[in-house]
Image (cartoon, rainbow, N blue to C red; front, side):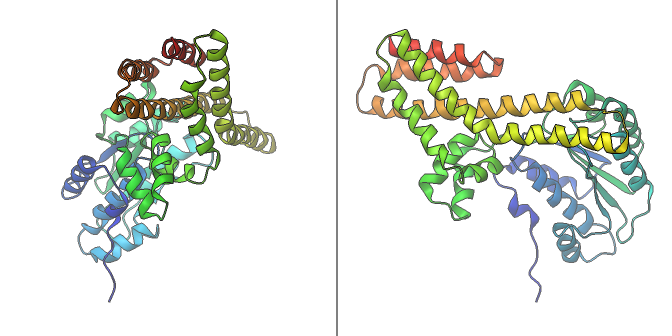
Length: 346
């Protein structure tokens, strides 16, 4: 006997979004925008939503439809897979061709378009046209990490379903379910900032424990002098540089591949500025995640001191929280840490 497939089981910690999408699958509109940071489950939810949409179509075996979607083999599920790092005109043209074809098995088809916030200017109008005037048989599922000004008009044609960062305990539980030791899972969850995919990578990062130890040891190295503050900050930033190394290597390879492809094809390089801007956002997010991890490590240590009765612990916790709150303003990293550690060491 075939076991029923439940694609929603892969989406953890997003109860509100899941409830909205499962309800929407009963009587869907033409377009949905799943909005949230990388690694929090929006991609997995897109698959589960597509499975419900196609399982609910008339004249189909629901369990079979779900199995085909999960295995990426359903003929009425079209995933747009950009050749490059941005959504290009050719990708929008592929969306239009797919949208105007008749469904093969169901009475509808589902088109999943990733990374709509990484779109070339020339592509916006073409994608907007088909999203706002789709055939009745088509449901779009668009994915984006944020609504940048360039895609506001596209977003306005969709029902937006937000996905927030995952609570640390949800990430820990998911990692433990994967077979990760609880202590290592706890460390990776703290460092991942609500990104389950990143947490799953971090559990393989042997240097993560060293970076955590450096943050934990930082308070003990402060002696009230600017020299000690400078040394602590430089060491912590060096650890963040090392953590960013693999990402920077991948980004450099991406640009090189783009340039080489353009040279082979005799094309003018387009979309490079969008890619560079995305790279900057990725790097800023990684460094902010590392900072939040470090600050959370300090807070945890100071909370233990507060429980032990250290009168200095509570005001120091508040100072660390001020630094964490300031990250939303994209401050100068070195100055933020220098000012915080100067206050903590006073």
